[in-house]
Image 1 (cartoon, rainbow, N blue to C red):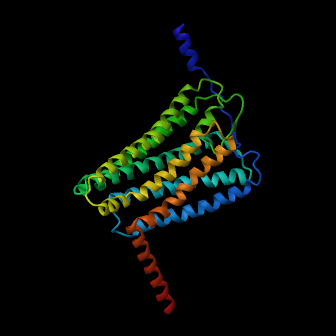
Image 2: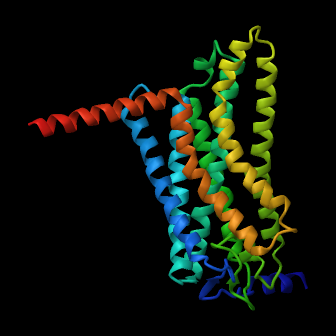
Image 3: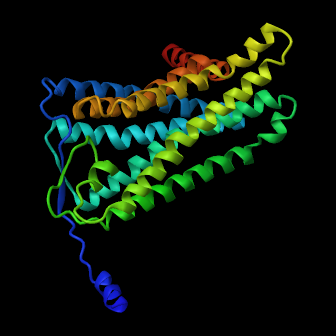
Length: 324
């Protein structure tokens, strides 16, 4: 009997549709203006993150471990918004709702890897700030280029492995009824919920991903700031405390910008409509990559000064060419 059951399992054929239909934003009046807004936001995100990356590459004084993490954040924000927004606009503004099975899984993979890295990048920056406040005299010894590159490489490897596992499990789902995805992209949850066989492994990997990509990073960041506040309380003068804490304000802004909208939608998911949830999640996916470079340019003195120098050099070159 056991051998028969094993043979039966080996012969199971999983039903894979030729395509899915992405059906988010149903019944919302004047929704096309929202996608025009998304295009505007994406344009700002593209310009801002490319600017930050360019400044960090051209200015050789900006080569600290912290700036490596900032560069990775800008790169991730650029790639994540580029992977998500153009496809969303094409899907809903130009009514291209059909997506092939393989393209949907590929789309899901890249979106989740990059969204995961957005969260884990904040952990890398949190580690940098924690070490800078707790060990100011030994910071350059403890947080080296090799250390930061190793942390970022580990996060990339973890994101790819975790996402690849989740996407691979989707291939074991049989879609024998609906192929309509109630989301604004090929979201993992709405896709496996369409399955008509056992999706327990998909539920498990979804819970693990939420834990390791959302909750654990947030808990670590909150714990790191508890340690930072405790360390700052030991500094004798208020001026020194404020000066030290100012180095963390940019990171705190990024954390609030990323986590607050997600937590708001997650905690109120049972009290809001599907469309409200979809709009909230889509905004939380595109707004942080747009505002992150603005926050770091205006709150990081080194990047601000470097940008001013590069713009001044460019202005002088233009003036010289005009005079010639």
